[in-house]
Image (cartoon, rainbow, N blue to C red; front, side, top):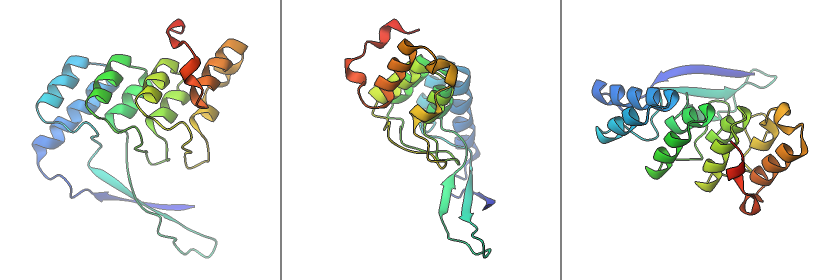
Length: 178
């Protein structure tokens, strides 16, 4: 069990920065490269998140808290574009130093989200951009364990996913996959 409370982030208080960050989040989710570049040029944060944070504390059987700390809530632009499979947006975000290791409230990285959505090309870009294939989410899953079953049914698909997400991606030609 977890006790979750929302806290207003004190990191940013200016509404203009909130609006810029909202623009980059929307652009990354919708795949609008022009709007994303405009937002970045205007000062949006490449790793923007909603302005709330989750305070997560584990509750044990005695109803005491272990104080796991505060974790950011919501997805970053990289997470949105990975989940949607927007390759051009992923490239732009990675070129602008988007962080591949940030996690959402479930401990999932952009690579977890792309793998779960079955976006092989997005996963390849993230791994090439430095994403760690061995990170586990809060349920103990690596990105490979989240790949949809239908993507793993044929040997060729399974081989591509396994080669990429278990660290052997260097020898595989991913250009053949669309």
